[in-house]
Length: 406
Image (tube, rainbow, N blue to C red):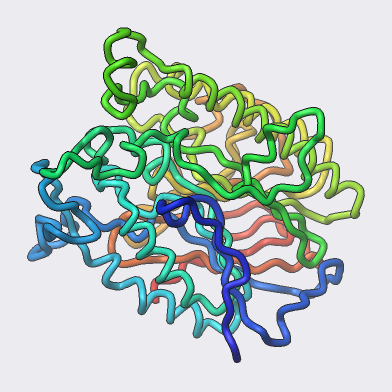
């Protein structure tokens, strides 16, 4: 088996920003897109969380200086537990050994919200991911992109040499990506910038990723002025023009990408759709006022609800961001729901539909993948379009899944 890197999107010095794919030159290179064969994926996210608060007795409470976790001379507190990144090679090997798995999806957040956004760290993740023997699709999270402007992630921070520790001082919009989008609407040429929005088909199921970062969809968490320089800081504005433009332009591109995905699913007779994004758009996360923090997600939720209802077949959403496993349908009131509780999954004490309008959509299901804590975990998702299972803790339509701790 000869492994090769099929597609890796890099910026000038940033490392991974949008999508990385590694795959093998073997008999699985040509997958039967329109067949009804059963296939299995591994889904995970919010990992590896280097440089986060210790999660076990005896774990290190400080990420080592002069390392990929913490740039030297930063002079900022940066507590951390490096066990996750140290365990990642073995974790990747375990997924490679899982002979059922043919594709890997990462739902975003490759480090914690207290870690600097350095080129060295991103390249380390890229180098680790090249060891996957199956294709890897990654959609970015807020921690490695939108939140890089925060001081605790290195935004605007300089070292002893007067150099910014983060790429472009942590300015989210300054992080260039190499675009290879080809399916954008010619009426909206700026959509070509969103290379992280991809879609593919396998076994009569259409998969689509959308760039929706956690943290209010960039809409109501004001970016750190220090990441933009003194001119912006002196204006006293609460939100910069780049932030406002990003929220508006990216969200519009996401909405059009969902239109394109469901149109293709209809045209190709797909039996189901899988949507992958980073943010938990129903997560209150203690931020107040809650309505303000979640409001910028509403256009995306409304679009998913309308398209799912019109599609009339199972639609499954995967997201990370809130870190704890959850299986539910937040588009319909009083639906079955389980949530992670320690090592077990138990009935939910809340119903997430209440954080947005009740769209009364029955053919939708959402799974939040576990992340951010040790040990690492992935979700083994099996797709069999010959079956149609009732919504439950571990199944929905042609989908069934199980949590795996290697």
